[in-house]
Figure 1 (cartoon, helix red, strand yellow):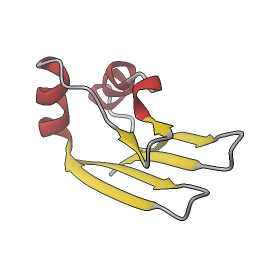
Figure 2 (cartoon, one colour):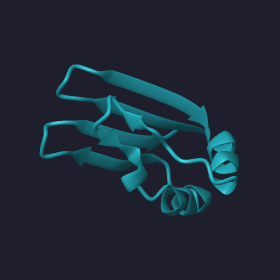
Figure 3 (cartoon, helix red, strand yellow):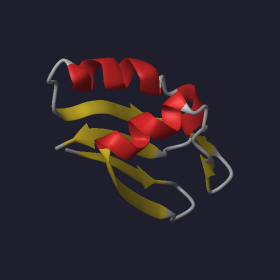
Figure 4 (tube, rainbow, N blue to C red):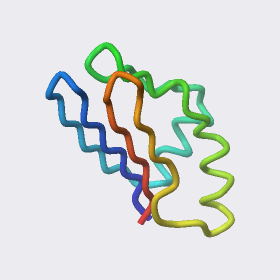
Length: 79
């Protein structure tokens, strides 16, 4: 399975990240934190451990969709 993060910021930044679920889980277990994107979209506010609890239960598709007050858009899906 693949964990996908898509960020479209109001500054014009477009970030697409595709990472195998097993790799993300290993990183989270080791204490690695998610960085900020373009200095303002802070992915640390997302509870990735909760997301992975859902993934381990078999939930797939779009798990998170965020539209910030600044106009940034973040989606997280698992396929």
